[in-house]
Length: 232
Image 1 (cartoon, helix red, strand yellow):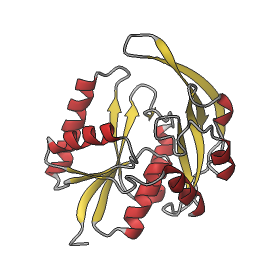
Image 2: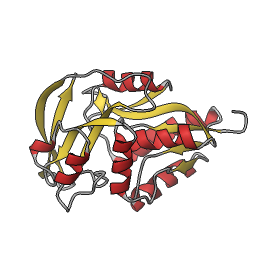
Image 3: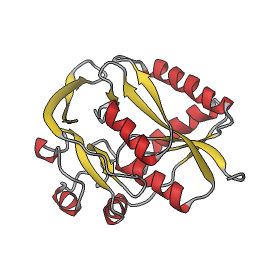
């Protein structure tokens, strides 16, 4: 491992980050993943956007065998405050000699540029193992390699409530509307991986209630509606 590059892995707990980590651990010997880094809601104690409880996030890290580090975000946070918090967090990793950060992003160019700019401020570089690949191909590979995940969040603008709680399998892919990206790269849905080739053991869970939440846009109008599945 002496020739490998220390890196942090930005772990969401969902399918894209799980497959990207799989490729780094099994097919790419350039990087030594020191930590999984996840943003969580400080108030609700859940993974940001995905709504998964921290206890299940910790179970994922345990089954992978890589230490977890969490960035606790307050309920309300401006972009400037978020950027400062991220910069301070990344600086601490950089001081440990970690100069690379890995992401599961696939094709959102503006998000990639933002990440690269944030990292450049602390002399770190971004790595995107899945970048540019067709998203249908990615989801089919995810299924074929034995990963298992459940849909924990959907954006009601793109998918109806019936998609919440479904497994990510071929029937899920076939039922997606043509306007929805197969991997939900535009935020159409989010998932929780409960079994994977990179896990020592599957993570047991139970399905709870489905909760509806609405968020305001930049004008303060509540026009964004999400359905979340609570997992225990």
